[in-house]
Length: 464
Image 1 (tube, rainbow, N blue to C red):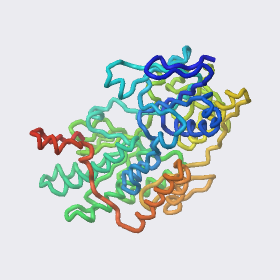
Image 2: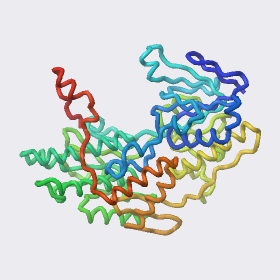
Image 3: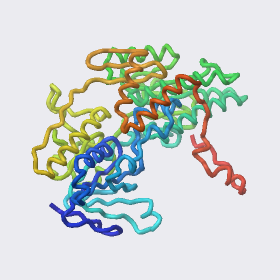
Image 4: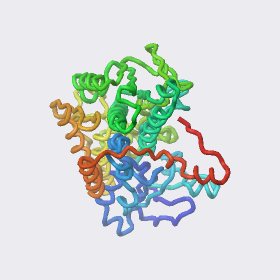
């Protein structure tokens, strides 16, 4: 086994120390490192093992809570889990991995410090590597998309979208131009998966509540449009619950366009494939994800879709001492009836895969047999706004309040650390006793704006 040493900039690791490098601080990255530091507690104390986590952010985002954060039901800081506090036995490096040379057991990365120093990238050697960079939004060459659309994958995007929606209501309330008003009150969401449906459901619910505080905006003045290229939404909850969701959304005057694509959003006009043209200042893109581009900058085997080829033991196929799980990995589903089926890239699998992955790394270091990842998909739950939801779990179909309650209970049980569980539960309890907060803090996105204006500069223009 190649013993690890950093090429420069830090103290070399002793030759008898095994370095485990974790690339990414999302579900798989954080949960794997968390379990490793528990399982290898004695080895870590004796200096026989070092766990290094390289992640672009100092926190893990619990993405199922993003819609509630956007709606104001949960504080943004409670949607994220600080890596340094949770992984106190690991070495956390905030940076971006640019490439991996597994043949040489080295990874090249940059940090904020390397940018300031102007010294270029840093190389780090490792003995075992966990590739868990997650995924990024899958975009299409739609004219105007890069200029006007917003994603819904990070806490920054969720809070930015919340601020944006409230700001559009402020614009509509104060303008005298009917065209500007209509465009401000038109919200287009592209993608009928979890992210799109839950974001739309929560934000429409929030805006409906907020409209009571505007003297000249009624609920029926707002136009919410969901665009989905296929003939159904929320396929994970089954066809019946998917159809119920469409009926529920349409009952709330949400325009659901199935088998429809967004063809352009230039000049703040959403042009749909069914001929519809909708002037709008809000286009939310949630039309799927794709493998993180760092995977293409490795010598590890990939599938046609750019994901890691993994075995049921979560080892990268044909690459000893390399491991993968979650969105970045194509893991065979050994519980499926049809051969060749892969595990869905969702949180339900990612959290469970991280446990098996960590256990297998420990078993490999101790020269013990590895176990296979085996989990029968139990179903899915989705929130459609406050007290509204759908669920298909263990063959049982729920809708309305019971599904919404199950959604909250399930995700409360899955969010890591007792600290976060307690804070989220407290916020839910308080939100049930008091009125919602509907304040836009869009100025947080430009913290120096007021000072620059005072110093003779110009106020930044709205980019969306």
